[in-house]
Amino acid sequence: MRANWMSRNCVICDQDEFSDLGYTEYHLATQGGTFDLTSRNVSCNHCGFVSAKEVPDEDFLARYYTYHTSWYFDASPPPYNLKKRLKLIQMETTSALALF
Ligand SMILES: [Zn+2]
Image 1 (cartoon, helix red, strand yellow):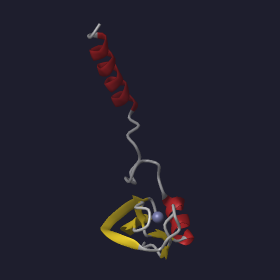
Image 2 (cartoon, helix red, strand yellow):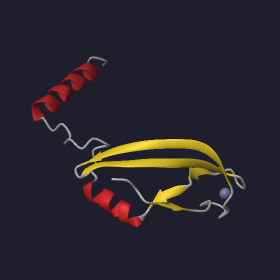
Image 3 (cartoon, helix red, strand yellow):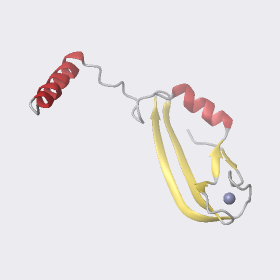
C-alpha cells in the first residue's frame, strides 16, 4: 500500500521554503501487508528545522495503524518461548552473581 502525501509548512515557523536533504524509503511489514513510504527530508530555509516535507494522509494512517504491530517492523509474533527466556534470565543472573 502506498501513502497519499499531504504537503505541510514548517511545523516550527510556518514558512514554506525548504532545502532538500534527500529521500528515505521505508517498507513497513504489517499483518495487513507491506506499507511503502518515501519521506522527502528537508531543512527549513527560515529556522533550519529538519523534518519530512510531506506526511501521509489520515486514510493511510488509519489503515496502517489498523494492521500495525507493536513488535518493531516485523510482522511475526515476538519470541515468547518461556523455556528459552528462563534460560537466558538464569544465564544473566548467574553471570551477574559471579561479579560479587
Ligand atoms: Zn521553520
